[in-house]
Image (cartoon, rainbow, N blue to C red):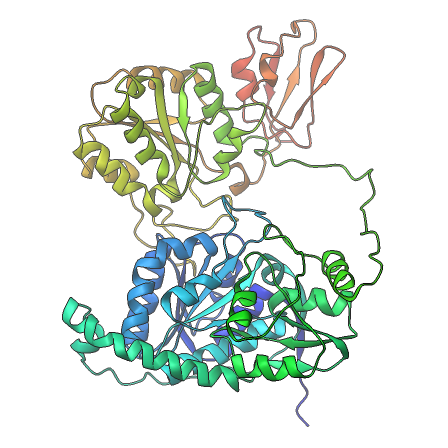
Length: 585
């Protein structure tokens, strides 16, 4: 007798397992929380060609190419990554696919690790493509297979929408075996795949006809189900909100939707007939609520917020209000729980860079990465940041509005982010005769999402040695004549470089290079204080290293936390701090 194997998996691990079980051949992504672990786990399966792409647009284009070749493919990204990939996505909605293609969008309600909060279900409506939403890890795995089958059956890319809670929460998953899929035959079809205006116009009726087929499919989709209960109230919900409903009020009737676009309107209307009143429980925008109303079903006002995550307490209170029941006081965590704000690691090479920029009182146009934390106290060394690669374009725009800005500001960007979308901004600077300065903070990894490789690290996602992009050559190839490399922890040399380059009448690039402190094992180096020489000036504390605390008018160093980077040594005006090398005994 065959025994079922179960394993505790996160939603991201389950999506990766689903890709393997259901015959995905090619998978591509750019790392971004909460989606990163999908590709990291797919990469463990040698049957799948898994890769980090320079950005999300390229990742989706790689998946599209694999699909056209007849392979099942998957692209994964966080919600803002879909914005980057929107250009090919909206045209892919016209062309359709060959092999099944799934786009995973990991949304971030509550803005845990993002610059905004957006509801990517609207991409389904915008592009007229199906949206599936799993509510636990088992469904995360299974829905990959459903999406691939649906993709091939209906000739469309399918958006699989996760959220932070689904991506990172763990639940039991029944494992299956891999079912390999032969490549579907490739047939040249320019009218289908070459989207010049004439062909695109001819595809529009097919897009509408395909949508009608999607609606029919949604009505009988196996991922939707009715769970009868108390007839006083029927809840329509999906994703993690289903878990909140079941935890808060397991007694109510529920229509759980696995496919949230297009809405199975007939199913919704039939469900509404079985209950006294209907409510929609969903996070962020009233996406489902609007569709349910358009289906002719009256719904109760839940009073739920349109921002932030929901919870069982919030959902339970909303249901109680609808039913006219007393609302219990929500659970409050103990007041004694300390708050830990995000902070740069001890020994982080970014800390010295921003100390110098703050000392020089420069305006700093920032970007997305660990270094964004420099915007927080005590460094307070960033004026603005917007999206991946925006620092360079913003710096150029400021300069064009006020030429004096060129000498008063710098753009900072990480090595991975520079290759993601900084190249075109730097080219724009050169082409439009800027005299601005760009600092590339090269820590040899994509650090903030957990140390993923990129084109300048020399390794692929699956660990193969590969071509290592040379950032200096890349900048010179874009036309930058002034490129200099400085150790990010050599604050004196860095200050000289910044002072000199911001005065130049042309574009300058300073590459502040030092590997992320978490990429190497500490060798036992640390620092010690000579109390007799210390004046208590607090210069060493200005960069905000968490390994330094203040005791009795002098700095005290946490030897277990100190990495011996030497930044505080270089900042001490009285030689009171000494670096202690590890003993070799």
